Length: 140
Image (cartoon, rainbow, N blue to C red; front, side):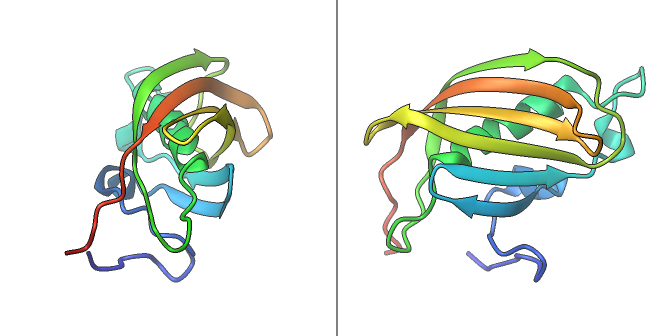
């Protein structure tokens, strides 16, 4: 797979859907990921706020990536098995930050919390999630 990572983004998403939304990984380390999104007009609903589905996608992605930091250069994937989203405030068309933290689990299943804030630090949404790691795919 070609690396289409912009020079300003140190980690490739390797996720076409997140790339289509222009999600950026700002920081990624074991058990933690920080991502950002600048919502576009196409991301809002008829009341002018960011669609809840966009927010849920960000929370799901951050929760998953938090438990998938590459080990020994091997990237893995995971399937969401549970996602509980709590919408706290409306998000407007302004930069959003999402932080995901792995909070527990084992080799196959892990648990994460995630939260979205706006540029003023206002809490927009939170999530608790469970993920099942997939086996690495060989490059043969």
